[in-house]
Image 1 (spheres, one colour):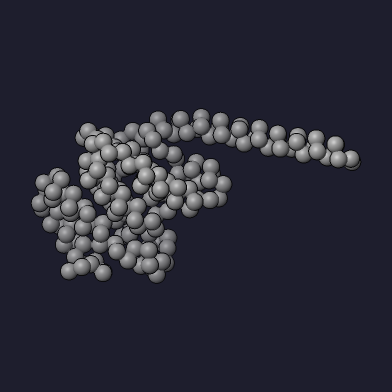
Image 2 (cartoon, rainbow, N blue to C red; image 1 turned 120 degrees about the vertical axis):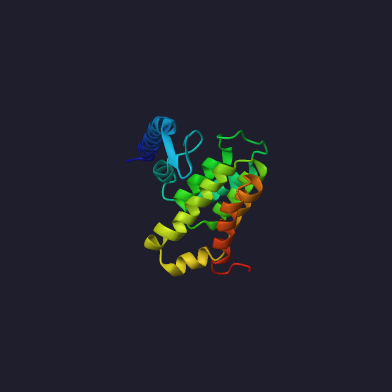
Length: 196
């Protein structure tokens, strides 16, 4: 085989590979449109999913670089936080990225407490923030210890008291629910490493 035949064969393989990637992207986008139209049940309410990838699709599209995708989404949340207040029942744009981050990397503690803080203070998305915090508390108290060793959870969630503390803040100052806020603050104070 001479150089010209080898080069044309390589070009053929590259073109074939690019066509395959384009086909995968088109197929994924069609599947994504269907997935985006399906409602998603989240802790406190059911809302229509609008701006989020399906976690399984996101994992597949990351080609094995799920943690890189998670970091990219986190940077996107921090840099592109929309400063507009949302109407009741409407989720802030960052909500969907934060929910996806929590699906892809449930050990990412900062996404829960800092994301909830951002949503409630900047966007007035109090229920979205409480939903994200409830998801973090659910991870910590129920399914997280079944999936990860306790030492791993203790390492990455050393400041876990922040979740109920922020939930208490939201319930007290943003929603005016003093009884629920008190329960959250008591729960936060009873957690390890809590500043009491």
